[in-house]
Image (tube, rainbow, N blue to C red; front, side):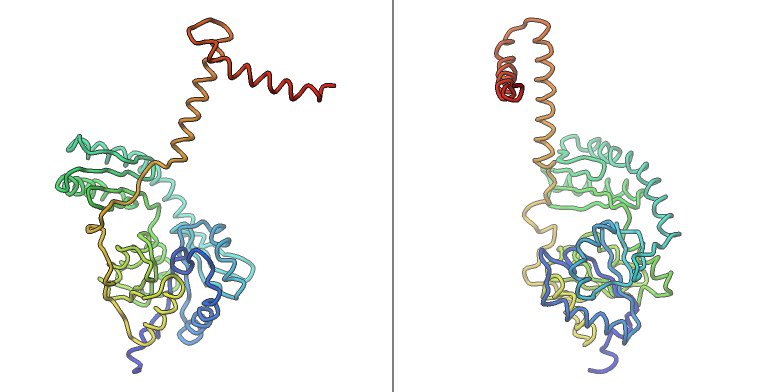
Length: 345
């Protein structure tokens, strides 16, 4: 291997996602020692720092990272909730105060704007296509379904034009569907800020991620080095391939270890897997239902309120079906009275 093949020697910041990248559904203890040695070598031989960028809160990060900490594996910096930067110390985490306070202010300010944004986007689409079906709608997400692909493409143009004014809105397309999501703060902005703080160019950063919210880190300017494990989303693999990064053949932590080896040897694989399917070619849109639990809870609450109202009315007036409505209540009171009788003696 010639020195020019060792791209890892040019890396000064190694950035990884947590869920789905470093961690799968269970701890991979057999990989921990190997990964620890690779990270320590990266720090010692190349003077690089390791950053974990996650959508979790700092408390959530501490919980899922505990198994790795037991093996002496700890990043130099943590970016929590896509944006808040903390430096890892032996005694805990030191916040990047100026940046974090600025993010807090931006979150508050933009949350006010976003409360008006999604209803505005909804009206814009329905004004041009009243037959569009709103499958899901809340403060964080808006999902449309269209019977006609042409209508979906036309609506996509409308949504992207309207969403351009809001930097935390992203529009995702699927066959016959459009998904608008609120990304509170892109990871790419936080990584760029930390790099500037440390005096690192984005061209000296290696980013490894698996989810949609990691793509912003892979599209920084100047371009950074990119990679993903084999379990990455189709759009992430496409972004890595487009930036000539490494698409690993192993999932999760095994894939991250493979990435480090690939960049060290210069054997980068930017070819999409043979079974890779783009979002446009998938057979079904992403799931965007309201959630069975939430819908049932609301229904039970409404029924309880309605039944309570009838019980109150039944105590003061007569109406058809009163006896049948009051019977479950009366039987319940009688049963509770029998159960309580021994306790009164």
